[in-house]
Image (cartoon, rainbow, N blue to C red; front, side, top):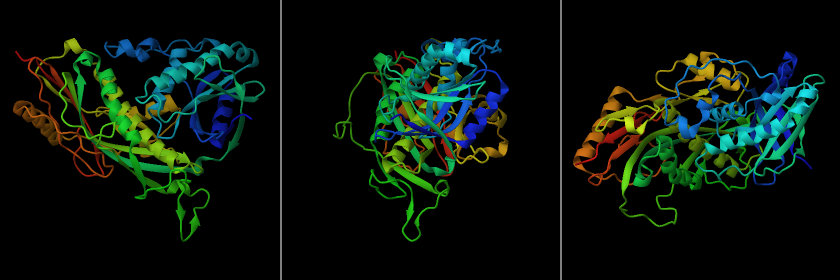
Length: 488
């Protein structure tokens, strides 16, 4: 028996509108898949057509080269491909990767949809298969933890004939290139009111040494490598739900002992607060003492992340906790990636002994009218609300008003915080103090201290930091990139 896929009624309206337009389309299927419990049910909450391609598309996604080169070229629209068979594989996969950053925990790009007349659809079967694999590779490549929280590898392919309006749904295991399609049943239902919302706030204060043999890598690779142990610690952390340790196999849905189970449609109005408790020990369970290593760089990351996830009302406690952990890890990774793209770091062009403090983008949630699941975006300090709304329009095909944006979930460093950060780094460097081990992450605590690093003579030191200060209600993110020249 194939998978059973429930798509919200809003998806039906969206696809019907595209079919009525008469032109071929390719786009993303966004939702939540059943995980390793044998579940055969998937939930589709939204679909978004891929925007028209532009010139220099290779420059957008060529991670191995573009992150080390200035790729800020003017983008101009190019003619739309004549057929679905000519759809740009890199452009579609880039759309999937960028859209993934805008999804809360528990949600992901789980497939593709295609709309075309019969002959074009038949001629494009090989292309659609290639696109499914390309989307999977693109999204998977950006994840820090490659094997965590992504057990289900079946991806959905929805094909709609623009003439007969007939819908065909199949799934493909993208882990194997020789896998064959399996039939799936696609049903429209009102499912959005069945999702449960989880929230967390994670304070971070990390001083991460970068080994000398990796110090010459580009900034993005340094961050990904250095953050992996911390993100693994987040994934392995203990968690409480509404201050209680719950049986992981229980259904997450809230139950009031006096009134009984919540009524249908009310679950999304209840916020489940998840607190994460990280281990202070090493991966082997043994408390680590001081370790001497030759380092060419050091990353200082401090701050607080506002996390948010959504799971269906049949989800277990474990699935809910994994969804919020996934969101924290993805949010931290997305900020760092976007910052690297923004500053276009070129190692040899940096100036020694120069202190620089960069703000990472802050998270901006969006409340779509009539849509209880919030999406998110990341905005730099110089970006306007209009810029944010344009990205929602381009990537998710959602039209928003300014009042739909949740702008206060996070905020930027003010001038005083920035000065304190730089003074702390200067003081630490001059005194030659080594940084203390990073404290445990407590989802309801804050830290504003900046660490320091004692370098061996002759070693260049670079520091990257994210600073948080102020009230718990204001989550602040910043990034410093510090170069201390080679000592003579």
